[in-house]
Length: 238
Image (cartoon, rainbow, N blue to C red; front, side, top):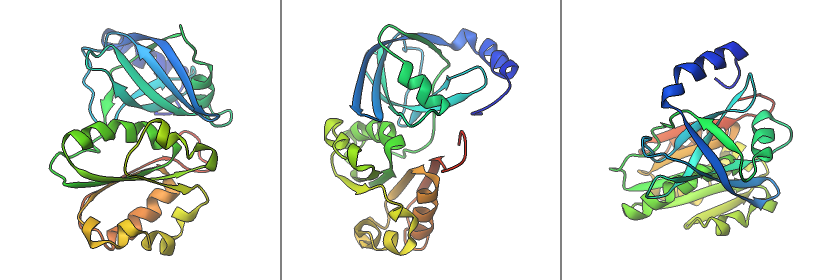
């Protein structure tokens, strides 16, 4: 529900008010001009966090945007998310303005079923909007000894973010619409290699890239494919 009349969001907030929590911004860090990592402090002990858990932020009276929790500390007192700041979109404006000392009321996080512990291998694909999900995945992949690869299409100014997070086993591609080319995607090593054909693929980010990658994989891959387009050029609030 990215957009709705004000009264709908007001009712929704009242219904969930007993389950909501207040959190304070305690740290902000720009990883690049367009990627911002935000740390919140609060009491999150009553919340359940899994790989890919997300929070819906009411970014205006009539708009909500969804952000993946990238990190939760062991005491459940601090969480982080990574926001892609682009143009004057409602979510970007909201996240750009957040600064240390600001408080935000949030409803309970929810989990998208990206992760299956029984899968031996994972390939995680995405772009700047997928960085939070990648960070959410990484410690679980390492702890549970999965084989994994990250494939990220990023603008050149964001390539260094991978080492700042840091993400291991990560291949970075220039964001130039290559992932909308079926022949180019089909030639990727992770697609051609029989070693990875039974992997679980998690595809997020640009909906056009996600559709192309999924189409190519369905002809070759025997593992599970989870796809979730986060945005589509020219479409508001996907």
